[in-house]
Amino acid sequence: MKLVECVPNFSEGRRPEVIEAIEGAIRSVDGIQVLDRHVDPDHNRCVITFVGLPQAAAEAAFAGIAKAAELISLETHQGEHPRIGATDVVPFIPVREVSMPECVELARALGSRVAQQLGIPVYLYEEAAARPDRVNLEDIRRGEYEGLKSAIASDPERTPDFGPARLGPAGATVIGARKPLIAYNVYLTTDDVEVAKRIAKTVRFSGGGLRFVKALGLLVDRRAQVSMNLTDFTRTPIHRVMELIRREAARYGVGIHHSELVGLIPQEALVESARWYLQLDDFEPAQVLEDRLFESAAAGADRFLDQLAAGTPTPGGGSAAAHAGAMAAALVAMVGRLTLGKKKYADVQDQVEVIVGAADELRSRLEAAVTQDAQAFEAVLAANRLPADSDELQQVRRAAQEKATLLAVEVPLAVARDCARVIELALEIASVGNLNAISDTGVAGDLALAGLSGAALNVRVNTASLQDPLPGNEAWLADLAALHESAQAAQNNLRKVLADRAGL
Image (tube, rainbow, N blue to C red; front, top):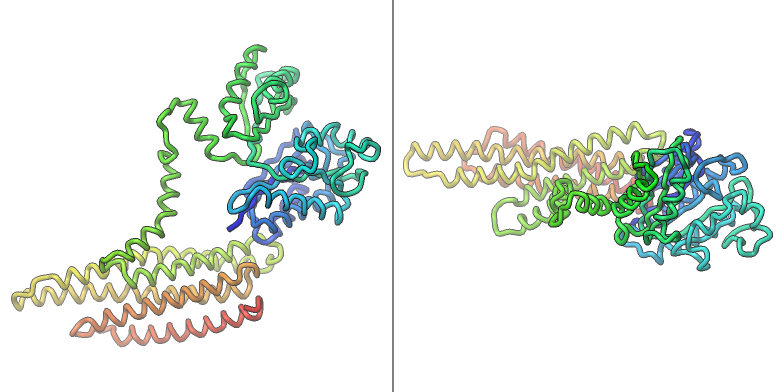
């Protein structure tokens, strides 16, 4: 799946209702996942981080810009951080299966749309810059809103890339494409902002400092702050920046009070800092417990398929049936979660929450059944291998076979019942859920029906394997027939819903 990250900065950090409205506009776009929100009252600024498919990310960014233009006026805005617009800057960052040129095209298309539909002047920056003197954000923001308002109409160098050469209350917006950036602030043990400004000049590249570092000295919450953007942490790591600030602060007789991140940080940056500070010269990322757990979980499906393909009796068809049902339940839960929190589906939120909870419970049971089915069949094989050299031993083996076969019937029978319920949930979520994910409900129904059929086959085979039928044989077979009939009816209704809602 293609994924783009977008990190718009809005000039509002003091009115929660405005921030909620802007984030709500972003969340209203289908397929968008908001990852983080950082609010700073002193900067009077809010940074929202979200990801999604490229076009969805562009649509969400537009929705946020439009809402900010409606609710924020730069005529009255005051804050420590430089800004020229209600939506000050909107960068797109490639995350997965997306190239930087694609993000550039996304930025330029959004810039044109914002200018045409909202009447907001737009400047392009970083990789999307149309002019070399507009690559750096600080060059575009020179003079801030107040300075740009007087210069935009008279100075050809300040003519926007898109939109009118005049500023309204929403100001101008800078849109672009860039690599991942770390927004990092260091607070000093002083309220002398001049110290912070001197340190910032020493640290930033334009002042002769570190490459890939941009820095300002500010007074925030009555404390001097060195506010920075680290534009390539792989070449100028965060710990190197911190140590230079620490040394420069000592020159002025002050120390570091604390530091903070604005938004998110790549894990690699933290790992490299830990490696440096702790002098773990031979450290490997694989030694991080959480990384190993995630890697193990990701490899689980591959391991199961390898085991399924091996020349061993278990895991076999019963486990595969349970696995198919678990995947179906996971898809139902996914569609539900893509529906929750969307204004378009506000009237079905309670119903969808119930569906998601039920799907998660079924998935958990079906995942457990993958192992349980293999264990049950292994017990049957073990019973079949018991000696039968005498009447007494034959009776022992027959009892063991009956007990093992009973379990080998009960597990797939429970799988069949759970798969039938998954199909019902797929029908429910298809009827009310997010239309953009409706095809996934069809896949869920097909997988669940396959899981039911496979489990039913295992029940029939296992019950027929004994010379003496078990007492519940007829009831089990009748139950399977009823399950299959109801599941097939639900599947047919699911197909009708897919046809009615999405033409599938």
